[in-house]
Image 1: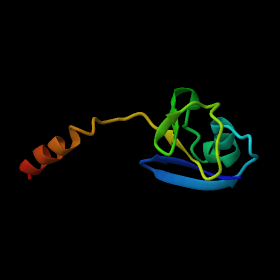
Image 2: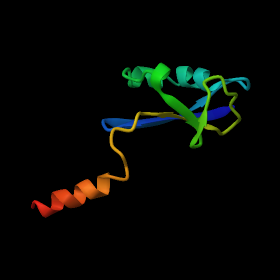
Image 3: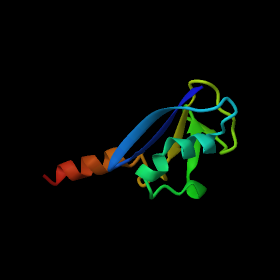
Image 4: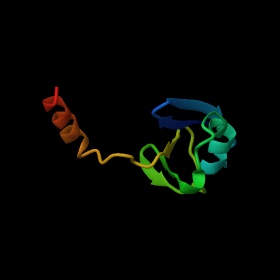
Length: 92
């Protein structure tokens, strides 16, 4: 079956489509995708993962067409970003 594996960080992003056996888990798909080699800083022990935007466990079974997503920790509160941008615009 075909699934996708996606990861994004400020320096780049990657979304891969891979062919996996029918009994593949989230963790197995991530490992088989090779995405950890392209982003060696990813620590799956400290990352949240999901399938189509919904949190999932590493041992969750995948279905054909699923998109596995590896999430990074939030570095800025999204609610405060517009305020910071506005405050910065006043200084110019």
